[in-house]
Length: 66
Length: 269
Image 1 (tube, rainbow over the protein chains, first blue to last red):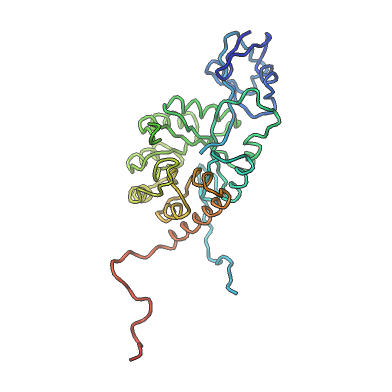
Image 2: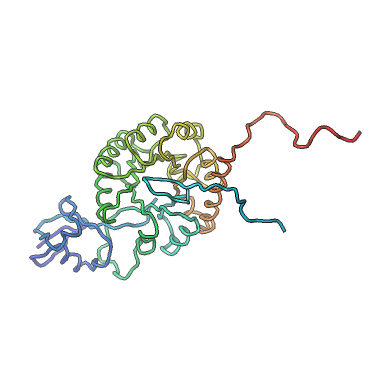
């Protein structure tokens, strides 16, 4: 299935949930927050949230800033 | 040899923000450093307990072993203050704060800034008021970047912001405190902590802000952009302490003409 992750296209085998996506992106050890189609998906729901083709996903983290 | 230890009469003087107390009145940003080690070293030299961070997209394909900012400045050691830097609308700022809350496991303290234009990075005040109201309603503790208008500062405090943070000069400009009478007026009327956020260029600027009665100063570029950031961080720490003490000690009034320090009586003839 085709997804948009942080503004870039990404292909993923389906079915996939958010954990599957984070595993694929090697982000499981990182502190991140995930938004799917502009809705924040709390970490506790990542294993249950099935991704759909065309989902727009934002994955954010904390970086240096003033 | 002179005794260089601190006088014993120095009062306990904690800064209280949103129910938490801090002994450091210097808040630092974490941007513009050469690497994470320098970020860590400068933060330690500054003695900062509250550090701002930005919320941005992760780099897809980054080396997973690469350390991240929150590993270098762990949330159990520092109060992390996510900012909304780069947001030009209330809705972007609100969305950023909500992502930060999710990222930091329900963390409520945020630094709100809604910018009005790229040249000045002055705040968009109407959008700032709108975002502050929505965030407070949503349960956030909002420290708010604002201009130096005392009326707006008062309104933000009344609305429930936990700290009001007027600029002293444009962000990253290093111009120093360009608006001391407005800052004084804001401080005199304050019902919440007032922190200068933006404009400091060097240690004397930080001392001036504290001498005006500010409760603290938040800075990033003045430290990270210095030739020796760790040394400047320590200079800022001392300046903040010196300025705070001078404010509490109460400066002498300014006079136009001289006033001799030595007695006039008993002069030889």
